[in-house]
Length: 171
Image 1: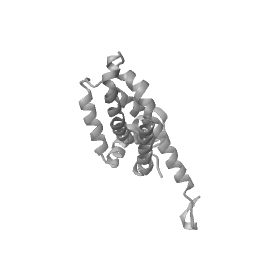
Image 2: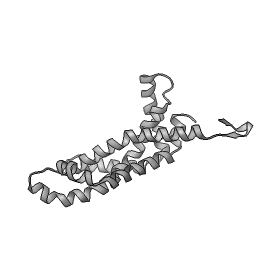
Image 3: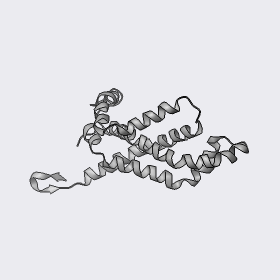
Image 4: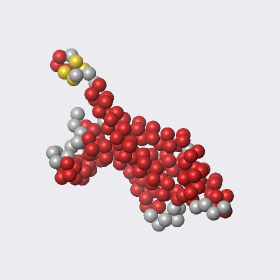
């Protein structure tokens, strides 16, 4: 229990809330990051690829307070209209944390998977496989460490962020 005037400074509720919020954000962001990275690697000739990469790199440079401020005006009205209440809730905070960690995870996944895919492309394309098949059947099964590193970095960033839960889910 948290009763500072009585000398009780229990942090279990705050720790549990942080872990649950970070885990839920990771459950939203990790599959999306993997799908986005696979699409980026499987379609290198897409005209949307260069602007998307630029947007992802820009998203990693945006400070947390900007994400929180934008979420207060963009995501909480949606949550308010769909769920009722004030819109400042766990779901709003989880969605914004997922958007916060998504670019970091995409960049880690791309940096780990792209060299492996490029090494397999000449032989794989010669036997009739496309880039997505090479990625799905050969690169991803051998990339456990890269997948784990992206997840752990995303989880660490979500756990370390205190401003988003404070702004969007309350204390």
